[in-house]
Image 1 (cartoon, rainbow, N blue to C red):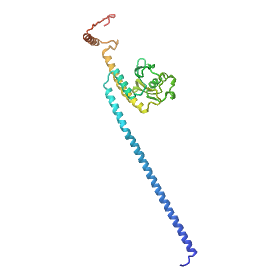
Image 2: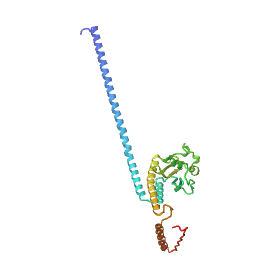
Image 3: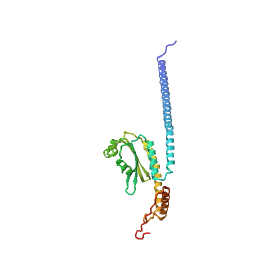
Image 4: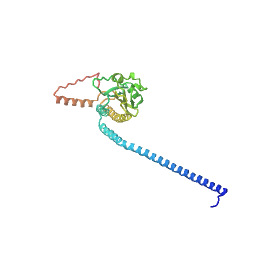
Length: 277
């Protein structure tokens, strides 16, 4: 073999270096492309995973939502046939008692339009407990003022209220509450307050369910009030507010029939007031 000249050695070294640089560049380029492609695929996988997780949560909640819709529909079907206030009050208390069976108290107030104050109409409580808030308390006043539902996890830590003025806490050691107005638009018909001695006894879902039932009940109550007003207009004189003669004869017929069936006596008193017709 011939002797390699220095010049040829230099050429070989240069060619070798160029080849090394070329293949190294190709290697890093391939590695970068592979890594970039991997990262893109990983990102797509993550997006798909998040989408699948989101759909899974929706699917998991569908039965609960469907059950809630069905539950509210059934309530509305039972409520819509009620036309008397007393029946509506009793039905609501029954539903609330079933839904919040672990609660320590349920207080249902109606708003008296003449005095613009609350009046305790229905309630559920433990035996031996006396309800002092016949006209509501500061929580119920907050509901009336804001026409909003309310949740309190622990009354002793809620900055909105002075717990020392909450009779439910001072008398019954109640810590958590959910409350909602019965309202049709801006018109408030009453307030319901549900309470528990446990801290954090209620969730936002409980509050939303309570508000939904209150909204349904409020519409039926408003209709019952309208029926009552129409009935009163039909049997009373608009000038004197006294009962009309037709109503007198109708009631007289009812009383006579009742007296006959009970075999009891019946008396009628007629008074002439200054020739008043």
